[in-house]
Image 1 (cartoon, helix red, strand yellow):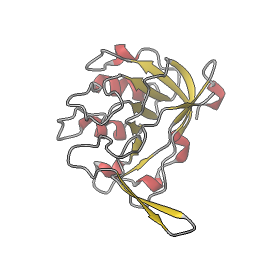
Image 2 (image 1 turned 120 degrees about the horizontal axis):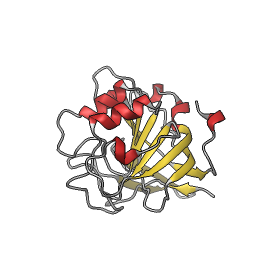
Image 3 (image 1 turned 90 degrees about the vertical axis):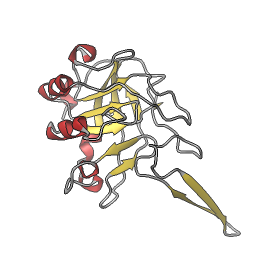
Image 4 (image 1 turned 30 degrees about the vertical axis):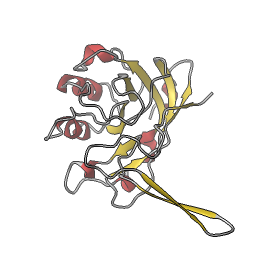
Length: 207
């Protein structure tokens, strides 16, 4: 059974204040209909590239695809803010997805979101985590100007996936597939993120 954890791209969807709104235009060519979209690369569920927050950083097309597919652990941290190591608990997979339920799907952008502590990022790095996913639009507080968590995760070699929809997902071990598009020079990419349940961590498949 596949679990789709992608937020839908649709007219009226919430985007970061001031960012490009999602728009779709359909043209009738007579025998076919051809659609076009205008959107921020950070629309809906998406991966951040280091070039998003670090001048000269790696673009989305140059990131390793292996990072975005493989064993993942969904952790329930609802009600936790800030999110420290104690909230994350035991790490048994190289990809951690945090369910906060702090941003229900819809057309309203959140005013505040829970954020990780510096100790939590150090904890993830110490346990060999390669990817962090969240169900909120940023790994930093909404009002952050310095994006400390973005920089700390990049320094730790941990990829970022934001704006997942984990509202129907129970804690456990899954296989994550969340591949970014090869947008040359892009600072991010929307993804179609899915989870495939596993009965237990596949240690042999851990990259």
